Length: 149
Image 1 (cartoon, rainbow, N blue to C red):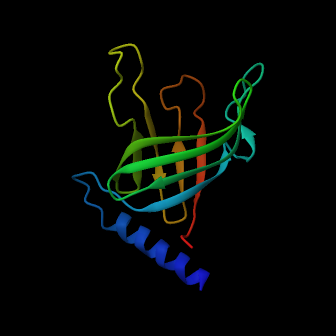
Image 2 (image 1 turned 180 degrees about the vertical axis):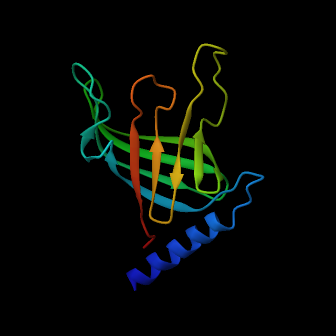
């Protein structure tokens, strides 16, 4: 029975992506679990930096039909220790392309770069570039689509 639910979820996701209108924002309802960061399996660091760095233990991303994206991330950080953070964003789809953004503009006008994750969504997963404005190589989060039980 579990396999049937996953097939239905994939069909719904494919239908949502395939029937998207390229002239306006589109949404889907989907759940993803983070599998790798730049090809490294979890738990792993976000980016190689000198000194202590955060380790991502697990992460999930939920997209809903209202255009909301919720990221829940379990980390081990030097200063805060073992923490789980939840953040809410907005997202838009244009075919298989996805953009995830902050729900409100930066309050300190002109003092912060625009926040935007870009990527590609498919029935099987989601690939997100989480630092598109960096001059360093992009950090890519690879999520796997998870069926609802």
